[in-house]
Image (spheres, rainbow, N blue to C red):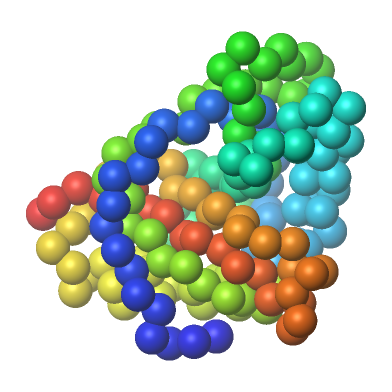
Length: 164
């Protein structure tokens, strides 16, 4: 993983998303993520929700791993959808809050996500003029790793911030 990642604070819009929620451990569990996103894509595909170039794929994380027990971790696998999208069953719909986020773009191997998150929270945040706030953190997936020459995941790690 590159160490010289640039982290910018920027205003992000709120996002309307369809999601599948998971409660429990998820760190490093690529099969879990593949299953959650697989179900979401199977639902979205026939509804024509994956055809738009604006569609974003993301994960929303609600809990601080330092203060929450692993079996209580909550996360949602999401795709952006039009506001009037109908959902049912295990597919829910919500609005991810907008506002100020610290955003770092990373090119990662699957086992480097934790290191990237630590770089933002442990290295960048204490040196910045910001503190995290209580909105959820987000990963936005910018590519299909299978189409990358080195199978890298291009991901934006976005943590909600407010000035100190």
